Amino acid sequence: MKEDTKYLGIDFGLKRIGIAISDSEKKFSFYRDYILNDKDTYQKIIDIISNESVSKIILGYPLNFKSEKTEITLSVENFCEELKSLLLKKEKEVEIIFFDERFTSSISQDNLIQSGISKKKRREKGILDSMSAKIILQDYLDSPINK
Image (tube, rainbow, N blue to C red; front, side, top):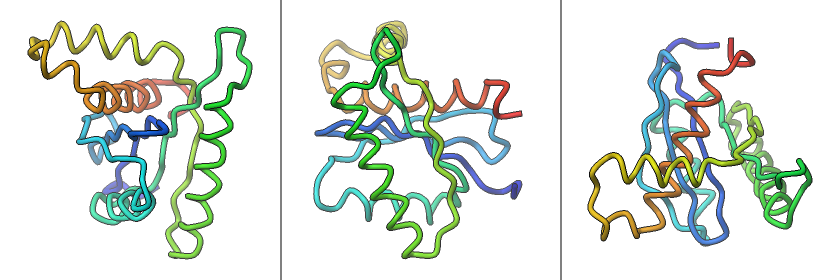
């Protein structure tokens, strides 16, 4: 693993995609502006990968409370396959890892409330999506599987 690379955290949504980036030491996660899930989504992610020297993507994997797949889980899997295919075409060697994202939305909401961000700003769902991506990525960075 190259030391100067970073990890990209993604909280996939049908309308918006939350984005977070690690530091190059892979110890801390920072949320970034979300991106709209539209026809330019994959190119925007490729641009982030290039601009931030991303070597690994941590993709939030939504399961229900019984650890079963849901409709959105299938959408995440399809998104992952499309992204892998595009990365291969662009000759970008980036590993993609699914990581359990249960409870990240409620934790994100609590973090936003405690951060002092105005109620109006907290209503912007994109901020919540990127905060969720930050939590997914930080949980991965802190987990034993990342050691």
